[in-house]
Each structure stands twice: as C-alpha cells, then as structure tokens.
Length: 461
Ligand SMILES: [Zn+2]
Image (tube, rainbow, N blue to C red):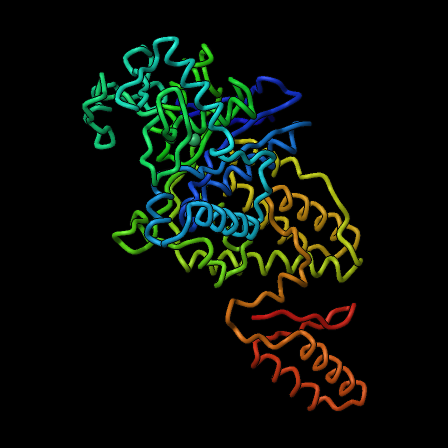
C-alpha cells in the first residue's frame, strides 16, 4: 500500500507522490512563543510528528521543518505585561515548548527556523512581490494586492466577498482593497523593528512562513500544514505570497490540517476557562499517556479531550508496558522486528491511528494467549516495532512503572529495593507472615509487587 493523505486543497484523500522521492520535504507552522502550549497545539504537533515518523519510515531522506514565530504583537504584549524583555519571553517560552514536546516524545524537527533569523529573506520576498505588481507600499506598510491573484482563495474556497465579510479582515485607510493583507508594518521606537526600504518595521505573520519554507524546503515542497484554524487566513495568504513571489502553480502539493480539540464537548477557550496547557497535564500523567490520548482520535476528526480519557490512556500504556516487561523477563531483551504490514497499512491510510491502536490491542492479547516461548517473543517483537513507529513504548518498562505524579511522595526506589530484599529473606526463612506483611505495606504506599521467573518486579499504582 502507498501512503495516502487527505488534501485540504482538493478535499480528497490522495496517494502521496513526492516532488522528489529521494528527499521528501514537509512543513508544519510552529508556535508563536509568547505563552505555554495548550493541548490543542499539542495535538497538532503530535499529529505532524507521527506523519514525519511514517514518512521517515517510508522514504530515505525527509526534512521536517517546524518554525518558531518569535516576532509577533502577542509577544510584545506579553513582554509588556510581564515587564520582561522580548528576548526573555521568547527564550523562556521556546525552552518550555521544547520541554513539553520532548515529554510528548516528539522528534525534534530536522530544521527549526526562527522568524527573526529570516528578516532579510522576508524583505527580499516583499521586494519581489512589489516589483511584480502583487504588493504595494502605503504609509510605511506593505500590503499584498489580493485582486492581483485571480485564484486567491482556492485553499479555503472562500470568495473575496466572503473574506471581506469575515471578521478577521481589518479595514484600514491605506488598503486598496479590504481583502489586502499586511506583509510589513511600521514599528514604533519601543517596538522590535528592522530597517527596510519602507522604513523601520517588522513583518506580518504570513510572510514569515513563506520566507522560511522557501529558505529551507524550496519554492515547491510536499506537505504543508498545521491546525484547521490556520486554513484561513494564514495558509491562504502564505500560498498567495509564495506562488506570486516564485511564479509557481502551488506552494505545497498536499495541505494537511489537524482537527479541533474540544473539552467535554465544548470548544477550548479562555472565556470558558477550559484550556489545559501541556505543561500542567504533564504534572498529572506521563507524557506518553498524553501522546496516546492526543492520537486516540483520527487526526482530522474532532478530539473530545477529558481527564477520563487521559486516565484510560495511562491504563492502556500500563497494560502495553506490561507486555514488554513480561517479554523482557523471559529473555532479557525484546528483539527488533519489522513493523507488521497491517499496522503500517493503517498508518499509510491517512494516519488511521484508531485502527493502528486496535491492532496493538490485538497483538497484546495474542501475547498473553500465546504459551510457546518463541512465538511469544515474536509477537512481542512485532508489538514493540508497531508501537515504536508511533513513538510509543520507547522507554524501558521499569522506568514507565516508576513514574510518579509531580508533588506525590512516592516511596523512594532504594526503600522499595530494601523492602523487596527483606521480603525475599523472610520467604527464604519460611516466615511467610512477615513476607506478606511487607507486600501489604508496600501496597499501602502505592507499590505493587509482581513475582516472575526472573525475580520480583514492582510498579506504582
Ligand atoms: Zn505558517
């Protein structure tokens, strides 16, 4: 089977045909670094991480780029509100973002360009757009001339009239058409700014991605995407800028968008107070449980997120790590295997994670039913390879079972080891009452003992 992706541009699931099979290039719009990433952001980036992993499994060379937007009015406002410098806000937020994404077991992108590192490229691109009649300067601003592009609006399938009626189109005296959007705007002395042919100023958000993709992936590349809310105006405007600056028919061949995340049926919003950040949830569950919960629904479908779903994800991983622990207990190490065909086929079908997870459950069940040692090992190896492709079950099962929530006073590992030794000694001395007392005492402190052929292992409840 070949990889198929749903393409927002054509509203159809299509077989993926790369521009260059020797080097696949994909881009996901990254965070604007002014505040903590919430789980809606986490969902989008986890979906793209999965896409990058599957692509890397299928193709010899993949460049996955995800940018950092480090110049934006939201950052300026945040810095002012905190009384911090813009650099402090962007640096601390970027470090937090990396820590959150690492905890979700996201691979670092191959390229992570920063907007402020590409200002010259943005100025050059804006210059080309002005020279070709697709942009104009007015009152220190530069605007994209939307009527100059006859098929503007192809991605979002909105007419220019619908866009003008949309709340996000700002009316301003320097605009020739209300649909025109900003490429460059003037900066006051206390705002970040760069010298340009149009005076000291800063770029609009959309031109940042157009310049960064061109610099790192070329004028036409394979996949571009982000959250569903970026289709209009951000992606529509990126396409307009890039196609008009480079004279191409497309910017990217496939546009992939992750669906919304709701909280118990409601849209996440500040006014409803139901926004969870990745960082706060990581205090309550291991990152891998959050990853599993975020991949539980198909990436294009709405995902209804709840604490209950998170607990289920943790319980599922307890079961799955239990398979690895048992298999390791029998032979020491689970060998590397090829990803089973049916799991790969599920992921190649527009990243069908619900099907892939049901196949993982089947493999786990088969492991438990299988009695023959070599067959058990083979199932465990398939299981580990399948989960690994999805960025799951990649840590040592012992580390998984030792995880404690932040702030919880888990019994420390040396004390647990000492208690296990004392119980072993008691059993050797046939003092079973004492051995049982130690087991119960550990249980009261949230530690479950499991006796196996290789000795006693433990996990936290
Ligand atoms: Zn973008």
